[in-house]
Structure formats: C-alpha cells, structure tokens
Length: 283
Ligand code: PLP
Image (cartoon, rainbow, N blue to C red; front, side, top):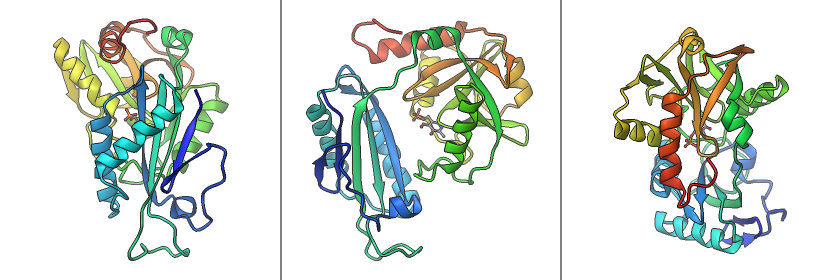
C-alpha cells in the first residue's frame, strides 16, 4: 500500500516536485477540488462528488480537462495503484499553466491533479466524547457553495481552533451559524433536525445530503433553516458532518459544554455506518 499522486497526464510519486511555477492553482488558487472517501476499496457517493465538481467548474467558467468518465476511471486507477482500502481521493482541477496574469488564459487548458492516501478517521475516543469547537467570524466570500481552492479563511479558522485545543472552527455571520471550516453543522431541537439551508453561504456538503436522506428514511423531522449561536448553545444535540468526520458530536462551543444529547445523531450515524461498511466493525 502506498500513497499515489497524479499530475497533468501522469502518475507520480507523492513527493515528486511536479507543479510548475506558472500553475494557476499555485499562483491564484484558481481551481476547484473534491475529497472522496473510499470504504473497503469502494468510493462512497462518487456520483455526487463528480456532480459537485462539474457544478463548481461551471461556476468559475472552467471546463474539465477530461470527460467525467475518464476522471472517474483515473481515480479508480490511482486507487488500485495505491492498494489502499480505507482511502481518501483528493482531486483538484486548476485553470492550468500560463504566464501570470489575472484574467483567464484563452484558451485555458485545465489540469487535473489527484492524491490517494490513507483516510483520516476520527478516533473512537473523539467519536464517543464528541469534539470541542470554537466560533469565528464569517470572513469568507459570498460563493461558499463553490468548492474553490481558495481556502485561506478556512485554513486560518482551523488553525485558530487547533491553537485553542478545539477540533473545528464554526463560522458565525452576524449571529447566524453557517458551517465549520471544513464541515457542515446540524442541531436537534425538540426532535427536529436543523441545518443551514443550501444557499451561497455554505458548501453543499455531500455528507450533509446523505444525513438529510437518512433522516428522511428514519422519519426524523427536518428543517433546512438558519439558526443562531444561541440556538446552537441551547440545542439538545449538535454535530458536524463531513466526508472525513462523517457525523461527529460537538461537545463544547468556545469552552461551554453543550447539552450532550446524541439520540438522533446515534440513530443517523448507525445508518451511515450501514451504508458505508460491509461489516460493521468500527463506528
Ligand atoms: N463545508 C466546508 C467549508 C468544507 O470544506 C467541507 C468539506 O471539506 C464540508 C462543508 C463538508 O462537505 P462534504 O460532506 O462534501 O465533505
């Protein structure tokens, strides 16, 4: 088993120096990305990730370097070459390599890069105890639904969380909780599952969608509406969702312990495990 990478038409070693100085991803963050979790050798929700990739590309006026089928085939080939069963496929597409200028090159030649590596997993301890989060001011742009490579505000927020001994930083925009720096957020109030609506203000997480689908299957009432920091602090349950974390309970916000309920979270996560693992070994 070994990590494997792909850049611009060829498989490379992950440590190989391959990005040319004029690469627009490097110079401007001019591109988009996806992260796909592989369970037991099978990419989970590949179709949904590819659809989001296409939407993000379209939103920034960029074509894909290959057909969707070829990108999927390359991802599967990378996975096979790596031999990793519990993997993450990181895939990014940039507007290519061109003399540095702000406006789009014409024609632009988008470039695909990929990395397949071992999946990051929440430790069983963190899954059991929940994870602390901090809040941070929403300073991102107004098109957060695009899975853009421009992640500096997210990177800064995550760093702030790490320095505070927290697991995630949650953006709060004038009192409204939007999402985490790399996750979406759910709360439960009197049996109803609440999450920010899929607007420009958040990334439309694939895991968020899977959780809403599971909630529907379980007959749990759902409201996609905005909620405030006060509502988060008083929620019966609160949890984060992402491709790497799945659904993870929030134990505290800015040092204040939450109510700690997890009845609905546990029901949803059990179904999530059923959908993703052939054998229910680790939760
Ligand atoms: N929100 C942000 C800002 C993210 O970066 C991510 C994932 O990286 C998510 C939400 C969760 O999305 P997904 O469930 O598709 O991993």
